[in-house]
Length: 344
Image (tube, rainbow, N blue to C red; front, top):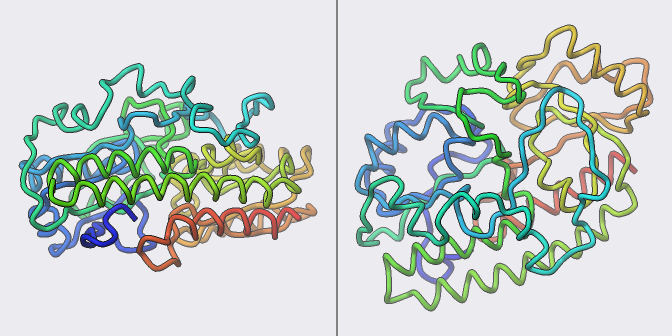
């Protein structure tokens, strides 16, 4: 969206891949090693990427979006069942200031793109290739898993840190920041700043694109707030706790998560957790239980058996959407549509 008219970023992850655990293909490792700029959420979402950046992209400028100025951060939720502060939702707020009081990242980090770079000890380089962008996504903490033999072990070891998220990383903030359109506008601005610095000749284009994106996302937020309003407050259960930023912005309420960590098949689901979720679904008369496209979960049948709850699919990554400037809008519209269709 920010590079329209100037070039196309390279996506490090293919559509539908889980950001939580991934083994780079040789072609992806080469793309990373050729990058002038790497845009990523941070190790809280893609712990396995951290080591690859140190070894393959040592000279690249890093834009770590978890540390971007203006991002509204939310703490990780603990346990399979969620409590909601009904006064905390921002569905009725559309102005650019309503998230400032929550932007804990700004309190802890220097403002501006410079911190995201200097913290990693990298200097800015030319932008001959117009940069490479790491595909997002939603979902946690930890350190590198560069090799295929480690990718599948995340679920075995990393779901027991007391937050329901694992990998040993110390960041206690929810990394699914892009699911709030106000955060998406801040992300566009941070990306534009990095591109403008690396490619001054087209700085005005990047800045204008980011401003247009921010206006587009503000209008999108208003539309989505209207779309989901009829089902706001109706409880549902999700595969893994990826949607807090969307819930916080639009007043929807997940009652709990099936998987204890990043959402892998049956990940972290003990008999006690299953029983707690079944009880919660019954108590709250949860309307729907949602899986995800990349993690079809067999437990949904067991969870909904004997209840009135339906099953649906939520896609926090846009797995089935064509990568490009329009993906973000389609992603959020898809979430809203899925919620309304199932909860309604």
